[in-house]
Image 1 (cartoon, rainbow, N blue to C red):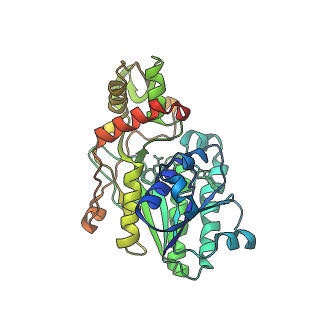
Image 2 (tube, rainbow, N blue to C red):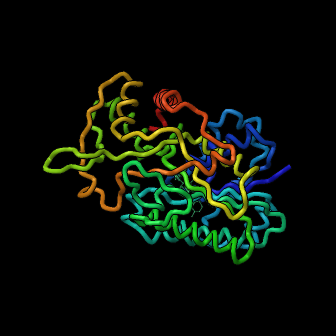
Image 3 (cartoon, helix red, strand yellow):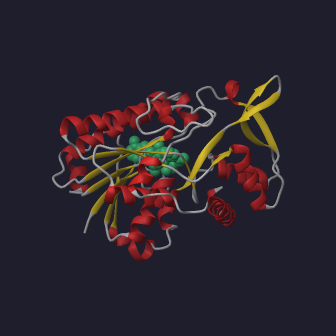
Length: 330
Ligand SMILES: NC(=O)c1ccc[n+]([C@@H]2O[C@H](COP(=O)([O-])OP(=O)(O)OC[C@H]3O[C@@H](n4cnc5c(N)ncnc54)[C@H](O)[C@@H]3O)[C@@H](O)[C@H]2O)c1
């Protein structure tokens, strides 16, 4: 039976990944999390199979900004896999406080890599990153795994540095690292500051929803757009990569379709059955460091045999309806 160390397991994505592990594998799981403002243990007790499967989960409270001492290393024990998801990830907060992002994402990742070097049975360390490391993508272009990093803000720069330091541990110490890049993730239990939960709130309360756009002479010329993937799909991809991925490689994990933020909010409004009141905000002046478009090319993982399978519109409407019925997460 395999054992995985899942960092950031109390976060939005981590809790979906944990649910996938508990439902689809017989692995033991050690969650390492510091339970900051975005980590929330309720995400675990909300997992449907939690009561039945929680005996397979051990929770270790630790802040990765500190190196993992002997006590914590013994608490975690030997593991076969590390899926490293813990990170500070809110772009606006990184702009206000860049150093804390360097500490969490660069120093934090390095501390975990240092711990990994001492493990005897480690087969795989997945260093989980984002499309934002590549910076904005021109219309019609999708970044492939080998493209140059051009991060535009301290969050994406810290993730980019974490990718490099991870890869350097593969080259220098032969650590079994695979690096992944993922686009915008959505799903149940996401932090209320993110686009979809925020839009649900604004539409329910019939308040204007800020939509970031390019405005020229007061006219809208482009709206921010992203590709979207459900958190459950990300778990499916991580499991696939664990079984089939090649050590030292980089893989883009992509969702189905590209949508503008306006289209996403219109879809959310139509599920709720109330009109959207868009408030177009010029992203150049209001959000320096934010990029208008991100896009990833998923050919490499497709050729290896993985493609997303959840139809977007159906899973978006399920997410919206679930969130309305569970207003704690709004
Ligand atoms: N949400 C997205 O759209 C998206 C897209 C691409 C990549 N990612 C990446 O996915 C991962 C998870 O993102 P999320 O949306 O679930 O974020 P989240 O904020 O919901 O969860 C992050 C978790 O990591 C923990 N954490 C943060 N810093 C830590 C530290 N120093 N030590 C220990 N624990 C720490 C937090 O307590 C939290 O539980 C991150 O690596 C993020 O960069 C997210």
